[in-house]
Image 1 (tube, rainbow, N blue to C red):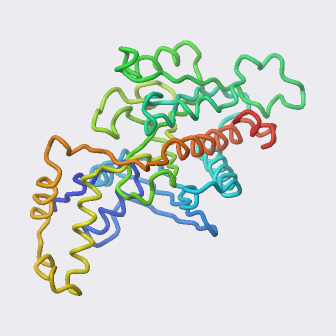
Image 2 (image 1 turned 60 degrees about the vertical axis):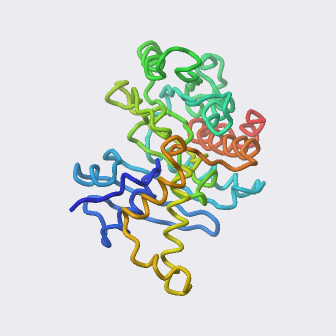
Image 3 (image 1 turned 90 degrees about the vertical axis):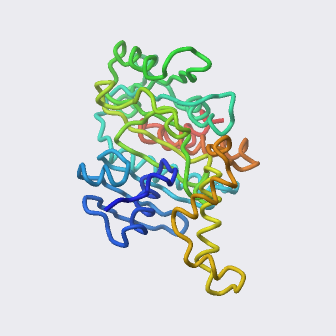
Length: 323
């Protein structure tokens, strides 16, 4: 059976699974899903376990953990702290690092383009300690890991593939883990800047905007790679398709739209292509308050990483590093 999931543009495994489930009208074999809810936070764990599920989902085999908090759109310090805590707990559970591990944090993206600046902004807020290991007090030793961070920029700025830069650094410092932070693309505007995804499958820099290049994965770097991403944009074509789908769902209740009830998939895609010609097909949409939102979510991501990597530093001390 042919599936047209790949016409939906998303970096979130949660959304890929939602779309595919709607298309096949049943659970997907080889995809395990577990959901837990707090008052204002939803955590979904998607585990892609078979090659067949990987092909259907368009996502590599592995674990994907999504933390959703719609309230992150607003300046809500208690909620930000709660998401930091959830992120830290999920990261600790995913990687299970020894206390003496060395971790390389990579802030991917272009610091000159705000929606793509999540990685560099978060990397700036990481508590780096690799250079301080010999000076740590006895009470901190064992609970403050050796952490270093790099913002390698993008090919257009440096003339070097991100993967080449990270490969060189990894070969020199031999970390136990690479944490790659990157901006993602979502299929739902509701998840922009409100969702954090962790994945133990690594990352492909530029894949969110259609530039699939050298991947940061355990296969390419020789060490485990965990990707932490936040959707900062949604494709305009996705918004247009959502509008058509919504009209179609309500066609029976509006006499002007009754003819839409029988609209085929091909017809819907034809309409979108007419509204968004090929030249605008990859148009990205981001919130107008993106500067503030990126700064806030970068602090949340960095705070969660800091708590996970440095359990002997309390949050108040971490908070001082973040600002």
